[in-house]
Amino acid sequence: MQNKINSVRARMKDNNVDLVALGPGTHMNWLLGFNPYPDERPCLLLIGKEKEAFLMPSVNEEGIREKTNIAMNCWNDENGPEQALKDALSYTGSSNAKHIAIDEAMRSHFALLLLESLSNPTYEFTTSTVGALRMRKNQNEFINLKENALIDDRAMQAGFAAIKEGVSELEIGEAINKHFISEGAKPQFCIVGSGPNGAFPHHHTGDRKVKQGDAVLIDIGG
Image 1: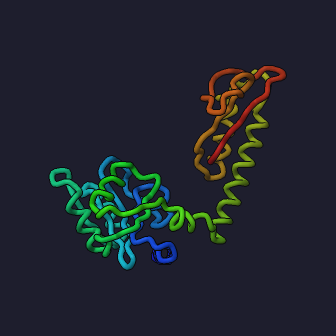
Image 2: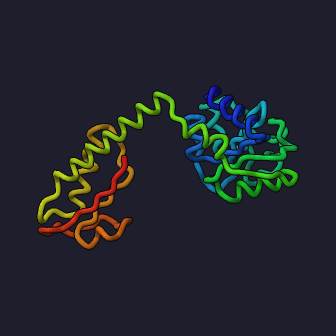
């Protein structure tokens, strides 16, 4: 985790970014290996030039403290997050940040709260910092991606094998999902569209049965 945070700081220095702010989501999970429950309460990981800290809803504090020793500035519903955010910015040396990088996937009111706590900073998304690092896969990530792709391929073959006249889209989807599970993977999505349903890219797999001559569209991930 610390190596990744150090890499983020190196990218910050190269791109004149004073502060990186991440909300619960894939960026934070990549960086820390976990993220707090993503609800409506403002929750931010703030990475300054030398220190990092959380703005943390008090309802999530106990569970997160078990996972990290990153400093936490907690707030509750009665008092609101404004003072805790100011304290977190001060702790990370970011109270006067001029240019910041904001997690493009965070809730908009998290971003607005942060911007209103600073003095008219310029901002960008994380393309030059966390995003740039995530694009460059290390060897372990490459191995995991390759294995995941091969599992997807085998699940697709299970779907092909299930296509027969009179079999429903749901039955084909079930064969695919069972294969994912048999290899220890978690099905993420499975779209099976037969005949005219294949014209709808986001078709909801249903009980239509395959007919002779049908084209069958399958879109899966796990």
